[in-house]
Image (cartoon, rainbow, N blue to C red; front, side):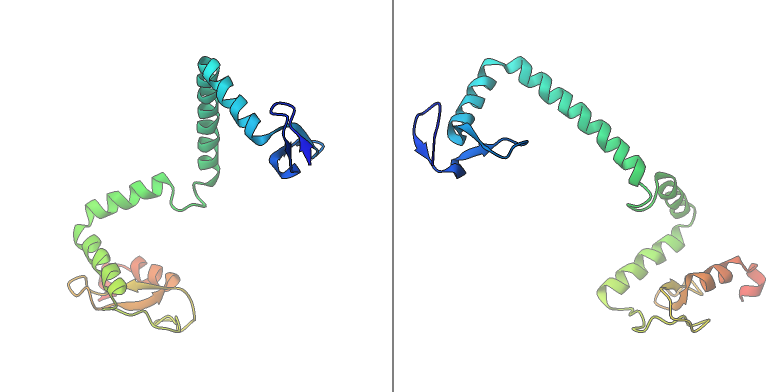
Length: 160
C-alpha cells in the first residue's frame, strides 16, 4: 500500500505508475496523474498542437523510410506495377484470360494438381498456369517458371 501525494488516499501499488529507469512506484496515483494530464492539456492547447504536429511529421518521415527500405519485400515495386499495368493495356485478351483463370481457380472450376509437378520437366516445383491457346481459357498446362520462360522465349513458328 502507498499513500498518494495528491489525493492523500491509501492505494495498492498497482494503482501507481512506475518510474521507467528504477521501476519504483511514483508518488502520485494513476487517477490523479490522469486528472493532472487533462488539466495541463486544457491549459496548454498550443503546446499540444505543436507536439502533435511534430509527432505527425516524425511518423511521416519514419513511414517513408520504412517504405523505401521494405518496398521490395512487401511485394512488387512501383516500376513493376506500372509494367504490369502497361502489359495489361497492350494485351487485353491475355489479361482477360489471366483474370478468368484466377477466378476459375478461386471457384474450383480449374484445380491445381495436388502434388505440384511440372507437366513438362516432371520436377516438383511451384506451378504456373500456361495457356497454349488464349481462345480456350479453361485449357491450362501446369508448368514450372523455368519451363514457362522457355516456352515463351521460343519464336512463334516453333511454338505451334
